[in-house]
Image (cartoon, helix red, strand yellow):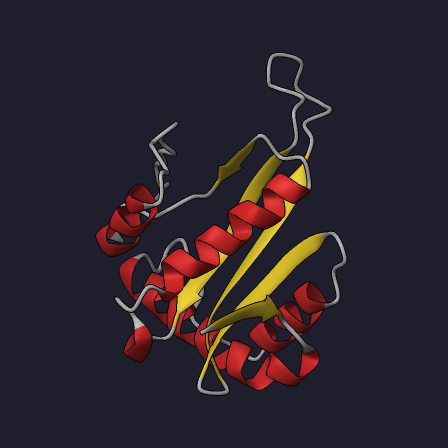
Length: 155
């Protein structure tokens, strides 16, 4: 398996992987997430061209089987929060047929290496409560609960 920067030529496969994660999230929390749509292609194209983001893919047998996106930011607005660079993982997805093969872990490891190279002192991500498999993956790779996001829907 190879981890490399995503390319425009990967777009069709990225759309399919994004559809998988979008559909899963939509089915679990339809008030929070939208169903996959044509807008996903526009979104992914924009992310691919965003030089402030890191976008990497996992390739196995010449096929993209997963991807990760992240961004390194410095808090400059909230006085009581750290001003050290923080890497924020925005999306991690592994093709449903390729899970439990170490691909997600390899993507996380590559992201950590990238973020350390950016001077980040920490890597963060958000995982939904309905996704215990992802939580276990992140915990195996050193992630610990730092906060809880809570919500209340209005009828």
